[in-house]
Image (cartoon, rainbow, N blue to C red; front, side, top):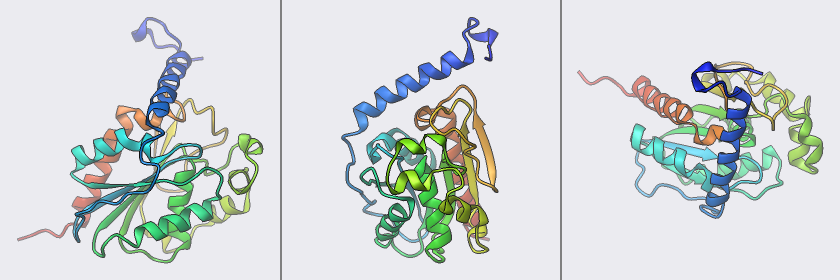
Length: 242
């Protein structure tokens, strides 16, 4: 158990638990929002669209604060992708592909997924052919190595996030084309939902201290990092004008 003397000697585990409790309360207020998927109305070629995918038992509504931070900090469009609980990763990725068809050619798509949403994002990149519009993926507390709690989730979703599942093994094997799409794994140091590592087998990595699985969605460091990655990727891909 870690202590931080700069915060009155309160154990870091208790601070993390407090943040997680607040995150649950915020999600309860936001769950009824954005229960259907929405796309930006004015996205054009050469602009950035950040598509956010929520985790199990949530809706796109819980992503509203992060979407707002990205829109304000990166000047990017955002899209809300919502799906009912229960489907497997492949099914969610298929739904994602149907949504992305409505985005115009030439936009830069940044996929940001929380928990199982992160698996669907990488599965789309790896298994749905080359989509040149997708320029990066970012995962938040994503069970790339599964979780022992999967036994509590019957059906396709539980099967997919069981440690050592066929889907997780295939994601780890990767593909040559998928490796061209940069990835950032953001992990919660106090994740009590995902029992195994949430770090993808390659790409950049960041661990947020004193933070749990759901609190990542509302953590200022996370919104700052995601916003910065969108800006940096834009700068890398925008041609210099003499």
